[in-house]
Image (cartoon, rainbow, N blue to C red; front, side, top):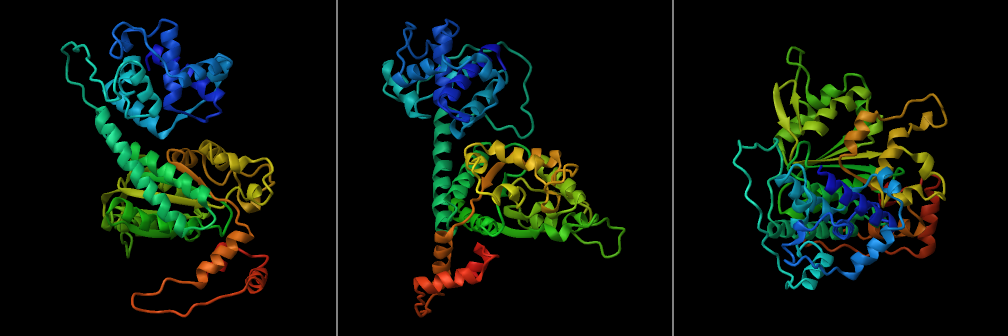
Length: 450
């Protein structure tokens, strides 16, 4: 990265710290642009906005800069930040045309359709809020430069804004549908929607289309949300998606991975793997790996190729099977020592704002039998957790009495088949409460709904 761009991002990080954000946003980068211009380190790059160089700045940017001044530079250096969805798309678009990411390349992507604060910036400097055509100096003639395999093509700002708007519309439709299907988990649905947006924005690289990790106590709707995601995805994207659930407790043996990926042809009865065979028939699919911590280490290691490259060789077919259009969902009950308490520390509550905290938790989480054993190894290998961290984390809350009553009411009023009228079933408050009490101490959403 260009040294000046690095300095710009240091200011952006100070702005984010002052604003208590865990991800850099467009307004933080604009604060960095102002800081660089204020120090005389960024003048030529802004002449496209106003030829005389006397740039007018939104009050919000000035306020962010004043707050950033109170954040020590060393605090920003020590902190690591990701980008929010909009800024991630802006940076990806800039970097696709300039691998060094010079400040001018980044600023040219800060067009008014990206964010209201940028639109205000343009208007203050004599523009009507529409995109400005930026003249760039011609590059010297050189040998052709070939993009890395799978790298997304450079996007102009209008195309980028339209793409973001389309993805945002799909995400909103997805979240709205899921909230009607999965009760009591609005925060988890919101996190899934954000992770879906991020995956769509970053689409084009290696690996599956999306990787999601569902973390939470048993019986709170993790499996249901994965099933509902597949159905909602078909509506949001207007396409057919296959769905397959794999109970990872069935893959606890050292050779179990052959069931997923196929056995060598010289074995008697060799056949395609249940995973690779399904994906070969349904390239666009949602794959649920339920309770991944129960799988044998050899099975987990075999999944690394899927997470890394988005493809794996089926040993029986002797052919590579692509997962690049597949969405992978991993559920886990790890971390129950946190879920079992009242969570006064707020670890999981804060994890909704900082998904990286979820993967930090997973990297050290132990199985239930190993909790408290100082010498026990984490349930998931660091290599596997690092692959999961390429995707999004979805944290599920513990359900409360009100949620269970909603689930019970919903289960008493099933959707009738077309042309069929079902009698109305009612249960008074006391009857519902007695039913829930009868399920103790094993009360969970699955038992209530069934």
